[in-house]
Amino acid sequence: MSDTDFTPASEQTVHSDASGPHPRTLKRVGIGVAIVALVVVAFGITSRMHATNQLEAVSQDAAVPNVAVVTAQKNTSGSDLVLPGTIQAFNSAEINARTNGYVRAWKADIGDRVRAGQTLAILDAPDVDQQLARAQAEYVTAVANQRLAATTARRWQSLLKQDAVSQQEADEKSGDLAAKTAVANASLANVRQLRATQGFTRLAAPFNGVVTSRSAQIGALVVAGNASAQPLFTVSDVHRMRIYVQVPQSYSAQVHPGMTAQLSVPEFPGREFPAQLVRSSGAVDQKSGAMLVELQADNPGDALKPGAYAHVRFTIDGLGGGMRLPGSTVLYGASGPSVAVVGKDGRATVKPIKIARDEGKTVLVSVGVSPGEKVIDSPPDSIQTGDKVQIAAPEKAGADTQAKPNG
Image 1 (cartoon, one colour):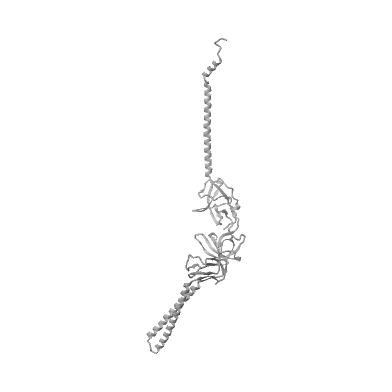
Image 2 (cartoon, rainbow, N blue to C red):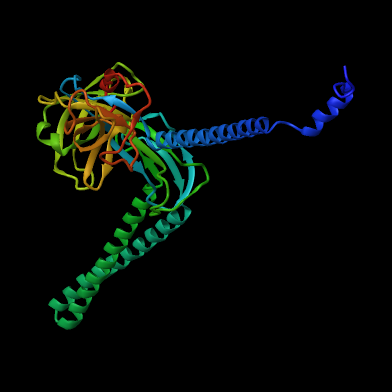
């Protein structure tokens, strides 16, 4: 081995480090870095686009209102017309004082049965007593003057026949008698008036009945003619009751005097009282669009109470058919009532309807809704035809809309 061929290992290593990485290696490294950067950028862009699409989808879903619907079904509740009524006593009287005074005593309280003429309360009116005493004294004086004038007139008439006095003097005495007689009559009328006023210090029941209110308190001042004051007593005749019902105009021709109805009250569930329609106002009220009718019913056991609320059920032919819907489905606008119906494409259609009968919680619709249509319950006031909606809640069973009307 020659000296020229021998090279130490340490020298070979120094030679290699001095020469550096190969250019091809550097190129490959740069390409790899660029690819990684492109992948990172592409992933970021893709993630942002996906988030944007999700946000748009959520916004679109939020813009579609969720609604609950009911399915329209035919009315199967029969031909009964149920309307609210107000019960009143057959006769009712508010007892007020006709004279000023203080309550000395009251003889009846609420719930007491009283007879016609029975004393309810007694008032003290000392000023009326004094006025009556003075009027009686004035009447006695007037009567005395009248008697004296009568005696004088008779005497002068006798003297006139004897030509002892002139005709003028006799006529003057006769005129004085007439004047004294008129004064006596006026005094008597004043006495009678004050006696009647004094009689008003005793308050009496005008007819047989029950005391339904009392505001009289012992020692309380009573002022006659005070329109704002409460009545001292209220007496009601409850052996028979009057029931007043507002009948819608569309049914006014089907109710008439003589027809019977069934009356029910909340405090006696399941019990009905027969009533008879006795009279009608014969006119439709412009504000309510209804005609007032009066029914009368016997009141066994005082079960019916004055002022109570009742349901009155009339049996009328021709009330079947139509669609019964919850009252919450109806929209009331300037053009009349309407409902919003959801079609198969998920869009709403606002339809005008005609309400045949409003029963409170439910309404009977005669025109505008077909069987099986999905009607939006509690629709927003801003809903328009063509609006996209989403049915969120399960459909209410059609039987729910057939609930017994509550008037």
